[in-house]
Structures are given as C-alpha cells and as structure tokens.
Amino acid sequence: MATSEGSTVLYVSALITACVLLTVNVASESDHSQCEPKANMSRRWSFTLTRFHNESGQWVEFTSTREMSDESAVHLTEQLFECGGRKMIRLQGTLKDPIPRETQDNILNFHHMTGPNTALINKGFTVVKLKLDGNGPVLTNRPLKPGELFEVRMDKRGTSKGYANGIGITTHKPGTNAILEHMANVKSGTWMLYGINVWIDGTNKFPDYTKTNIYNLKPGDRMGVMRTVTGALVFSINGVHQGPAASNIPEEVYGVYELHGDATQATILPSTYPFQ
Image 1 (cartoon, one colour):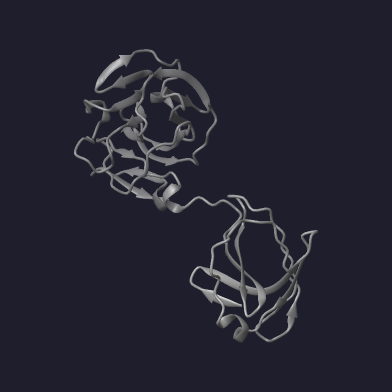
Image 2 (cartoon, helix red, strand yellow; image 1 turned 180 degrees about the vertical axis):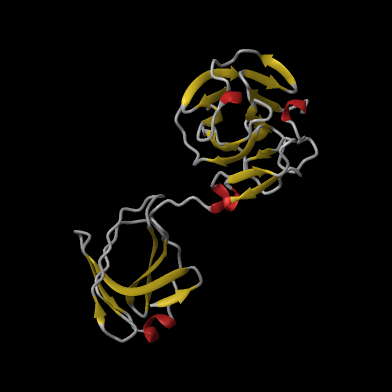
C-alpha cells in the first residue's frame, strides 16, 4: 500500500472470473514501485476488501461494501493495467464523514458587525442592548435560505416605553452604512414588522397585518420571518404563521432583529423550514 496526499492507493494483482469474482493478493512494494497504469480506465464500483497487514505485519480483518453514489462515505476509482506480464489493479479512494454536519459558516447566528448600541454574547446567538434609551438592530451572519425561518426569542425587556421588538429582512449586508439605529428609517431594501404593521422601505405599507402585537410580547415569546421558496414574505409569532405580507422578495436577504423600545436581550433560535 502506498499513500499520497488526500488519498490512499492500493496495488493488487488480480484474477477476474466470468462471475465477477475478484481474488486478490497484495503485491509487494518492489512489485508495484515500477508499475504505473498506462491508460485511465477509472470507474466507480461496489467493492469488498478483506484482510490486510497492519503496521506490525499482522493480518487484520476488514470488510467494506458500498454502492458508490454522491452520498457515500467511501469513494473509489479503479484502473486496470498490465505490468511485468501480470494484471494489476490500482484502487484510489477517499473517505468522508457519512453524517452531514453544518459548517460553522452555515449555522445561522447574528453577524459580528453590530451597531454601537448592541453587543453579542453566547457565541453570537444572543444580542444585548447597551443603552436602554436607544435601539439596536442586528443582522444574520449570512443570507436566509429559501423557506428558512429566522426566529428570535426575546429574553429580557424593560417597562419604560410600553413597546418592544422589530423583526424583518433586508437586502443590505451587515456593516454597511445603510443599516441605521432604527430599521424603519431605512429607505430601501427593508421589510420590517413593528407592532402589528409591516413597514417597507421606511413606510407603513401593511397596517394591521397581524392581530398579535409583537410590541406586547413577553420574555420567552418568539417571533420569526421567512422568505418562502416562491419569494413571499411571511412572519410568525410563537410558531403561528401570520400569512403573506409581501411578494417578489429578492433572493438574497438577511434576517434582521431590532432591540426596539423596551427589548434589551434576545436569542436567535435554530433555523427551521416549517413552511413550503
């Protein structure tokens, strides 16, 4: 067995019968060191490997059979060639984790570039307000996927103003000058829910959109927003779908939550795909 960066190469001499029985003997290092395939005859296949020498020279049982596909944990290519009058097979393969894992960049949390009145804690999943009198919008670290629900739980709120929270989406990227302290003042590429009204580009375009007023939510309550796969804008309150609020939403939009009014702390919840 010889190794190269990112792959493992196994050379074997083989006898292939009509019933597709593969009998293998491991070739020595001296046998295969002078042999290289002359033509590329690679293909994917189902395979079984049994018994090999470990580093101590002992035989170790190993059996792995896998029908090749894009989702397989094992990928092999095969090349058949002749060397020194013998049939040789060169197997080259890669291994990958069969369990899908989201990369850190793919996990939805708050973007690290926040406004002057906010700070992130809890590894970017929780936003806190620094000064109670101001507002504090914060965007998601990446655009929302079609059908992905951006949901936030309000953790803490004060009592001085009598209203709290704002949630929505924007086409503006985190850290740009377009992001203001109060998202209702952004004049382009922004859809926000305040109270029971939907504000689009700084104007109240959809009064009385919902009967549940997010200004009255208490700590522990949830609010969410989603761009559907068909481009509609949908809000949710405590998991209840509030119906479409707008259509023809651009594909690349970021989730926005605003520590508006009395809201002082909120946490982004794991993103879900509850609606189609």
